[in-house]
Amino acid sequence: MDKNTVTTLVSKLISAEETYPVRHPVLRKGRPITTCRFAGDELPDTFHVGGFLKDKLVAVASFYNANHADHNFIKAAQLRGMAVLDEYHGHGFGKQLVLSGEELVKKKEKITLWMNARVSAVGFYTNLGYHKVGPIFEIPLVGEHYVMFKKI
Image 1: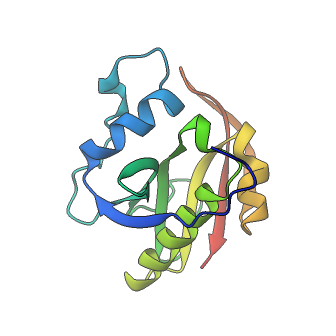
Image 2 (image 1 turned 45 degrees about the horizontal axis):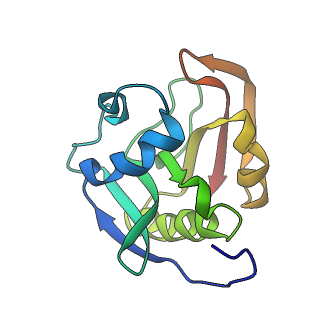
């Protein structure tokens, strides 16, 4: 896809299972696709957002009704499984999807959104107004992360 093309992503609610074809190559490459199923994916208050270009799903993000065990966030939701297919990086699709998800989280009367952000994604989230809290930590088989949060 041409980096100079400005395209708007269409965000839609999708099922947990529909996230796997994007989560797998981005977040769990080389591991079984079953590792793309996250605890809480099927809970009734969890929702998943897909970013579509025409009919092609190119980005996903999941939002959970969850506080953090070590941080007392108020009215919190967690962002997990944020992924954009590699060939669609650099077009602002990740930003569009996160902002769309933030609006849906607000409608659920949440005021804080947090995530365990991969070190490589800290700059992306910082540019969206998120802040690091606490030390770097390792998620086994995944890599180093920071907890990040934003008042929405």
